[in-house]
Structure formats: structure tokens, C-alpha cells
Image (cartoon, rainbow, N blue to C red; front, side):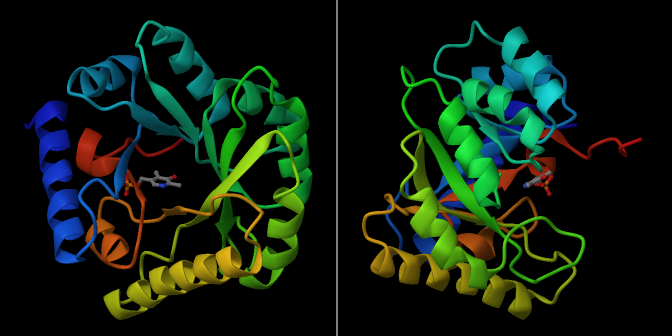
Length: 234
Ligand SMILES: *Cc1c(COP(=O)(O)O)cnc(C)c1O
């Protein structure tokens, strides 16, 4: 079995190769280690191998790990799971980034609840790019109003868009989903120049990070390829 450090090495090489292949700047793509269900010891192992950014989906599990790993200097926590409005206070205080904001109510609460002593919370708007019934995320049609409103919130920095395309579609369709997200971000940047940096595309996971990078991903969210297959959720 390969170690987490080995896996970080091979995923990093995949990212570098895809970045080069896409003709993009070295370092343009960041690796988010998706550590849901993994015990703190495994995150510590990844950190010791140089990984600083971790993505978590479940709030209580994340808070326990944030506490257990408080000694790790420079560690950065990203929330990537569905958000219930009664959980925003804890999310606003414990994380540096939230990739899964999909409605104004949640954005407002996160902004109000962000401690003004901290730098504004970096957020991405999650888009339900394939309009699947089962998925969270706003529609592309909802984005212009959402971006205009979120861009005004003082506790947030609007960094960009996130999507989890339907993984079962053929590669060509997957690629057009990523491309659609990238084009949408470009258009929003043009139409809403003051809403925030809008410099981030959070897209691509273990199985499709090369395609996502080719289409402009700036964060790839990788779990399985770093930590192995997750136990089935009970
Ligand atoms: C679990 C998860 C990932 C990681 O998926 P892998 O296929 O294990 O790399 C990425 N993004 C989100 C939102 C997730 O929930």
C-alpha cells in the first residue's frame, strides 16, 4: 500500500503535468486535500508531507479535527459540504474558505457572523451545473443576482465558482460542464467587476482533475487519490 506522502507526490505530479499540458502557469492550480471521514492522524501525515489545505464536508467532524490539529501552523480549512443555516456561525469562525455557498441567506449569515478581526471569508458559489435534482447548488440563471448581492457583503470575499458535475456522464460532456463553468465565471467577472476577485474555479476531483485543469480549474478537490477509498457512509 502506498503512503499518503507518496500519494501527495503522485497527485502533485498529475497536477503539474496537466497544468503544463494546458499551457498554464506553474502553480496556477492548488490541491485541496478532501479529508472527510479520515482520522486526524492521516491529515497530520499529509501535513508532514507538505499539504496545508484541507476540505471537509461535515461540520462536527471538521470541528473535532480542527481542534485536534490546532498545533499545525499554517493549516488552512475549507468547508465544501452542504450548509444548514443554523450552522453558519461555526463555519464562519472556523474556516478560511467555503466552496459550497448556494443561496443569499447563507451568504448573509456567513458575512454577519464572520469575526471582523479575521480576514473576510473566501467563498465560492456552488453551481448545479448539470441541473441534477439531487444536487445542491444554484442554477447559472440565478448567478448574476446572487453575485451582485454577495459582492456587497463586507465579511466575504467572492472568489469564484464551484461545481460537482455528474460523474457518470461521458468525458466529452464532463469537459463541456467544466467549460461552461469557466465561461460563466469569465462573464461574471466582466459584468460585475467590483463583486470580488472572481479568480477561482473549484472543480475536478480524483478521477477527472486533468480535464478540469485543462478547462481552467484553480482548485482541485481530491480525496480518494490521496487517502484511499472512503468507508461507505452509514
Ligand atoms: C468527497 C468530495 C470530493 C473528493 O472526491 P474524490 O473522488 O474522493 O477525490 C471533492 N469534492 C467534494 C464536494 C466532495 O464532497
